[in-house]
Image 1 (cartoon, helix red, strand yellow):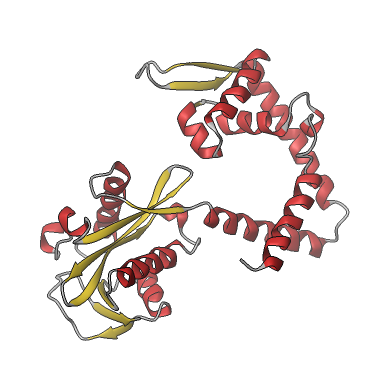
Image 2 (tube, helix red, strand yellow):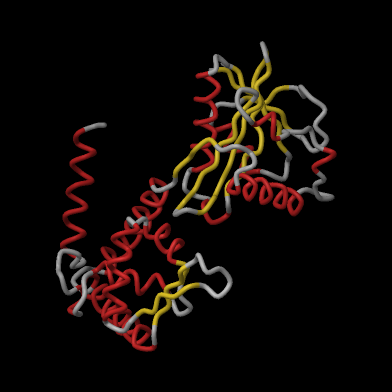
Length: 293
């Protein structure tokens, strides 16, 4: 990695942690550090499954337990077994916890105002726009992409959402049985591969390859959740599929898509795929693409 880029990230981290008060034991002048305050914010009013909370905050289970224990001792949080499943623990704010969260919200607003106030109107706009861009890129960097068997729950979720979206967007809907298949065994090594993207423990995208002996591989099941669009995830999934193809000695990839998926067509063209004559009889296809690496 370029040393100047690494140094730039470290400088930014030092500036931000100091400016927002993350180094202080009493965040926002309250009697608790930033970690405890963030847990209170993340719980919301209804509370959360502790496992979900850990995934959302990307915290070690032991550290999260210590944060929750400290909040419990202060009477701000109650951790108990779920009524639906005794194996699941749920953390909920108490009345005192909700009041403390409200106070933290007010102090946080005041802290943000203190950052913006010394700046000109133009500088404020630039700062908030830059923050939004940083947030988007940091979120993109938190996405993980891994190969999953088609039967994995995250894979089943993504494939189900993929089919549901096609049904909503295609003229006349979408019926999987009328489409060229990508069966589970065709997306399982060595016949193929299925990649699943996750963000904070939640599945947010997928893409698959079908290999054919002595012939181009097919890109299938490309989908990104609406909540993760704009993060460059489609391009990342496509690039990782291309890397899997190259690792298996495949230099040419093909795919087809429907005219309703304008953003997908734009992605493929931007990634170097060229439109070619139809190479299969896919019922729902309007465009066929190919790329050689």
